[in-house]
Image (cartoon, rainbow over all chains, first blue to last red):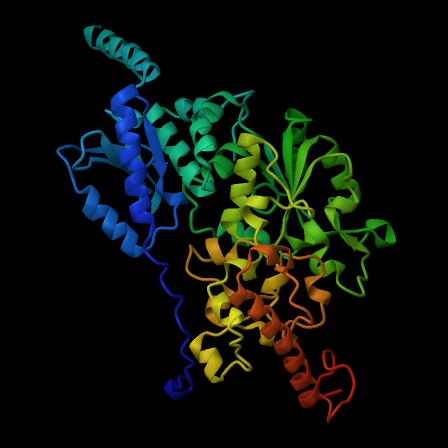
Length: 137
Length: 368
């Protein structure tokens, strides 16, 4: 039974103020200049940050998009995007159903997850040789 | 549930399934996010998950309602964070497994034997001691003897839910079954209490994954992980500014309730309750009870059932005294307002209840 006149509106929780985006940009700038000097990569995990919607929007605006975008279809769906600053990457991991499973900002030349690992290449060698042998037989 | 293998790591399991190192890095990233790890821990997680043998988890249920397991399995992040738990580590759970009867008991024994001394034992529910433990038996064996046996082969015990942690509802007065928490029976193993009725799903998986990756987390005096139970609900409540200004809802339908003021006078146990509800929230981060307009019941604290009524205001605002040193003048004024409010609310309650009954306002019902 619906009684619209009886509905008690609940005051929504106020959005947290937008202060994290600026702090993050400063951290990114410091990490990038460190990387330029001594090649030390840096990862910032965004899921541990209390980002408001406003923060996310400002971060998107300030980082922008660069020249490279990579899709990784493995256990999860990962999208690696260069920002407008070379050496600053955004890495987003999603479930097959589209829900976010983690987001990082990486300061490096190429994020680790993009590289083919030595172990995987080793297994590929075996697989490729086996496939060739099968075809030759 | 896991396949039978020796000291495999999480990386080994993924490789055996034909997945690449990229999948492994995705798991690491998802775990880092799910646990909100510190930068130092996040830097270590890849190495830990690649080198440390994956844990075996055995989940036993005693005097409980299965609400904790419901919370866990209805988790809104069933994907990757629980992959380590469900697919890779969970060796035995009597409620989730297909096997029944003797086959189930055999599965339990063999899972324990294989990882004897090394597995993580999760216990859900209190353990009754009255009548030689006859109030809870599984396969002809009392819960207390089953738990003693299982714990003697465990590396650590995780008590999931308030029943296992502190006795919970079975322990509530008059406790006819002689129920006790796990810590009363297991005394020679590390115990992590993950309290709550039920605990937040992400907290359950988070604690288990943290333990199996990094070992024992920092615990509070009630053996709860500080990372999830370090703050009181009150400390992190978005309605706290109303408390500090002395603005309280007096009934569930007054102007204060509509405006989202503090629920302290309606019996909120937030000041004395430690849990992650205000930050992690429920149902996939949707909200938590106070956000829905209901006071905190204090379900993650010992004896929450016997604290004199969910809607009776706390007699003294105790939760934040330890923080008094860092509180500003405005907040200090709020403490005084809070004290006054408690007295006022109690007077009002007594006024509304006394005329007809005159007795204990808590337990009397209009019928009696």
